[in-house]
Image (cartoon, rainbow, N blue to C red; front, side):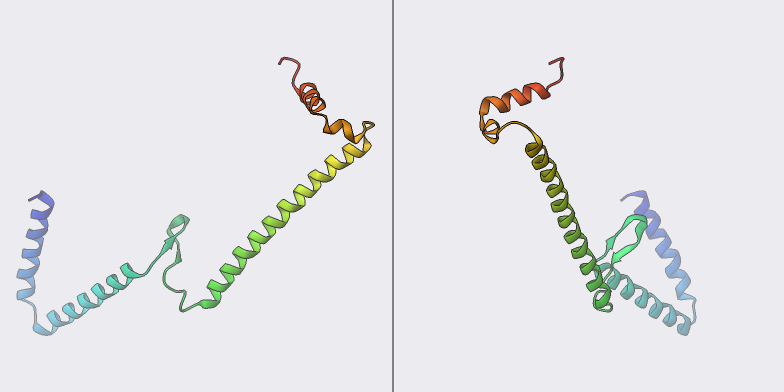
Length: 131
């Protein structure tokens, strides 16, 4: 038996001796308070919780009490995902526009871009002088 277990047993014995000398009404109130505390601890242990930074509970079983809060959180998440998708598409369109403008402004015929040797030549031209 570890030292912690021995110490816990000694504390329990001292507390039990102290409760034997208490008035019955006080002992009954203490027992009821202990039961309430154990029930509260049991309920708190069963409720799911997601803890954020700083130890704040983000979800702690209050979804049934506050369905509007949950719906707003889901709506905000969907809005964020939609905006991100739109922004990525907008950025891709801007990149394509820049490429198309460069191709149209160039003097080379479009067939030159289809030549595999021309693509290798472009890559060679873009490489740094040291390579």
